[in-house]
Image (cartoon, rainbow, N blue to C red; front, side):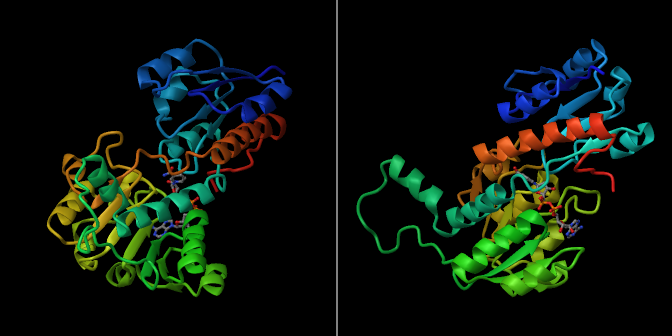
Length: 323
Ligand code: NAD
């Protein structure tokens, strides 16, 4: 039976090729910017789509399914799925999947890159040179810190958090402490990581890196109170989802020396950035690009397509979000 899907933004050819091989028709949004909700609804109203490949920039909820009630499967092109109303999906019996395990290396490396950018003062140094301020070697210029020998606190040690631990343990001999709702015995054995309460992790870590999904229980996990517990020199890294940190509280803490620095790839009000953060030199900001690698994007494209194909062929998705 002929199937039609809508892909809200352009995905790499690797996944499209699989869809074509299976005779699945697709229309695809080709704009650089994500479609507005209104535009997406108008597009979905025009055809009886059987499925959608969506992005974290699309809010997939009741309005979408009312516009296109024929949708049977939503394959999210990302690991996180906080953009999808799972209650609505359950109510309607729609299949829903994500792309776990596709961007772990990329995001873990990016988290470590943000750590190094701050400890080496790399971005500040780059700006300094470009502004023509470099007048010769100065023993007191832009003094940084080592990662070697530091204690790294990971909040969430699933795929990405574990990979960060491995890189830091093997490459820097870091002492790893973590908090997670689940114990990760394999990681403990491999890296000597120690599980603790989150407050203990925040109190003892020199660098804290967040790797939890955005859930009601993790929204503002890092807030005024948790920032106050951290070391004054602590650096916090967020490559998970923006709202895991109360950005206003973070901006205040960074400005007032409650903590030492922050490396952020994701933002609470993305793409808006809390204005105070922009002005601070102890902050490194990247535009949600932690998974932006050719390899990761190809794997995401293939897995999203495979989930769509599996839904049509077997009535099940491979990476079912609803457990
Ligand atoms: P994962 O599911 O493998 O790991 C998440 C871990 O968080 C699990 O071990 C889980 O037990 C733990 N956890 C859940 N709730 C918790 C809580 N309340 N307190 C402590 N731990 C908790 O996911 P992953 O692949 O490691 O990805 C983590 C997140 O990273 C994703 O959900 C996504 O939002 C984000 N992400 C961001 C990018 C990016 O481009 N910046 C790319 C990929 C993923």
